[in-house]
Image (cartoon, rainbow, N blue to C red; front, side, top):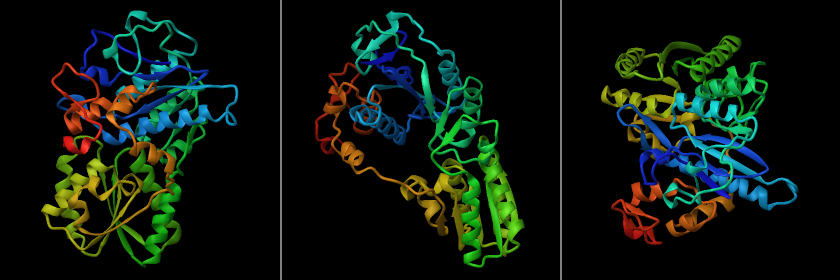
Length: 377
């Protein structure tokens, strides 16, 4: 049974977007996924399309496991998926909530709703909050460090699909697991690339938190150990309020004529703004080596400025694609996502934002979506 917690009257508000998305089961997998981006002006209202895909992937995977009786023959998995809006504070709030539910808890049944969204206002007689067996997410090393630290204390495993910082390999994080290798391997691959092309001087631009700091240290270790190339320039960029730093960094790169290789150990948001500044200052004919946080993004996602400044090379873990899941995505329509029993509750906000329509007879000014959304752009 699908249950969705809510407080307040049943209407489609931005608060609804932050509600947990739940399915009861014998064992519950908690998940922190970013369905929105944090924005300093309007809080948590910017829809993050890859996040909706990740929610769907999680739901689809658990559904496939439950269908296959050879995997967990006597156990049905459930889930409790929370949107943390790429916000560390929200990630920690959700993690604390998970941590307090080490046993079954009753919550006010007047605020528990069944069947996809709170708009149906169907009261459930089940507990909406269940203890989790493990937590998947959040994305990125910075968020994972705090979450893994709290879960370590209460003995709940944390599993990250993207956190690569070497700091998470410390013995303290015994309950932390990941599906990607730590950054020591990435630094080694970068050094191999530099050696292969016989580049002698490189610059490193790194974000000033665990991901960038430990990534640079790993690369510096490779440089000192090999003695084949020199890191001639290092610049750190703070995760927030970094705009004033971009112009002087690009000016330094322009003055360093002997450095033709720039290694970026930063996130995509900082990278797009940095390369926009590089484009304004006409910094060209450089070779840019991107860490996995950038290399896994598409050129369209990163923007045209990033692709117009020179040659780009990227380091990323081996990626696997699931054809069955890709086919599943291609066949999703508003009607299917609305009628499906375990429907991804955030899909309707996708239809509204991208196609200006709703999967249901909506009272908030949106027309009802047709099955063929190509006619609705």
